[in-house]
Image (cartoon, rainbow, N blue to C red; front, side):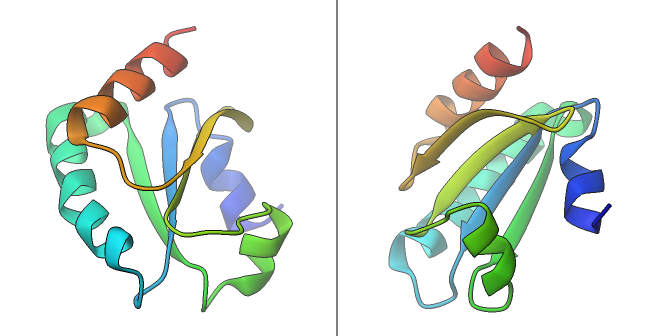
Length: 100
């Protein structure tokens, strides 16, 4: 099992942010995700993955555009979206999807 698979098999929700250093919307999303983490604390893990440095992983998970956020819990994909969202939208999605 890869490190990535261990991470997404966590009991608590894990939000993966596939990003690129050259991507404008990705840069806008970084402080938003920090605020999400500050708001939710230990209830969530947020992992950033640079698609340029992790091309195989991005390909395996069919990440075609950045930013792409994917929410996992216990190895299951609960939600996925490309593009930036507001802090409120992301928190609502995490709470809605992970409490099922």
